[in-house]
Structures are given as C-alpha cells and as structure tokens.
Image 1 (cartoon, rainbow, N blue to C red):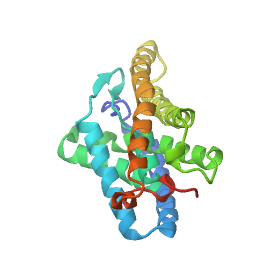
Image 2 (image 1 turned 180 degrees about the horizontal axis):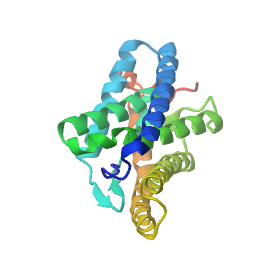
Image 3 (image 1 turned 90 degrees about the vertical axis):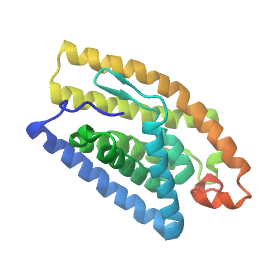
Length: 225
C-alpha cells in the first residue's frame, strides 16, 4: 500500500504529521510494554525479522497500482501474531522508510501518510486481540474465524485510511470516488488471501514450538498472556 505522491500535499500534510506522531507515540508505548515482558535481545531480533519481512512483502510479493494507491500483501496480522504488536509496528515503519530511501524516493513525501495508514489498523488489531481473544489461548490455537476477524480489521482499516486521505486531499468528487472504489475492490483479494496465509504460518509455527527457533517469536504465540 503506497498512496500516490500528491494525493495529500501542501498545508494538508500537517494532519499527516500529527497522525504519524500519534502513531509513533503509541508505538513507543507498545515497545515499553513488550520490553517489560521480554528481554532486549528478543525484542531486537523480532524487530529485525519484522523489518526484513515488510521490505520483502513490499518488494518481492506481487503488487500493482489500483486507483488512488497500490495494492500490497502487507500481512500485518501475520507480523502481529508471530512477532507481537511493537516489533510489527517498528517493522512496518522501518520497512517503509528503507524502501522509500533506497528504492522509491518518490514515495518519501508520503511517508507520514503511509505510516499512519499501516500502523493505526495494526493498533486496532492489537486492541481486538486484547478484548476478544481469551487470555489463556495461544495464537497458534486460534480458529479461522478469529484470524479472519483480525485480518478484516487490519485490511479494512487500511482501505478506510486510504479513502480518508483521498477525500481529504483531493476532495469529494466522482473521480475520487472512482479511484477509491477501484482500490477497495482490488484490495478484496488481500482480504481473502491473508487469513489463509496467517493460518498456514501459524500451522508452521506450531511445529517449531519445541525448537530453538521458537524463541524468535512473541511469547503469546505459544502461551496465554
């Protein structure tokens, strides 16, 4: 997901700076919470894995332009389930920054817009998991319906933020509606595929429970909170 440069510009970018700053502040809170339950080596390893994963998702997996933005398989819920909310948030931010700096510098002016768009839905998934996933249930034991809800919240959040930025930056008009509709329609493919990817990854992670690689993942993957 990369909102096209120019969709939001000028004085309107002030809002993007504000929302990104809020997302950064909440990410810092998640980091502190994670470090209180784990050690810094584990946290650093999970953050590196998340960053590498995000970069690969953006550059290696299929992606294509659709309306106002691009469709990417971000796999935000996969990162959340395997690595935890804080490493996933940092991985999304760093992956976006690395990609923009070295491969797509034209995207950098939209960094704060894109950052808000991928992070805030992740926070929503974290809140959903805290509220509705039983505290004694490990993520590897989640049902398809649980994973589908989490994925729908994340992907739906991404689409909602893209629509917001489009109407905020370009105004409410037929052309904007068409562009947003094209993006939302194309993104339904992601909504259908990601829960299946999540379940496949969780099934693979379950087999690593008793190996040394199990330590690379968030403790919640294998045990209750």
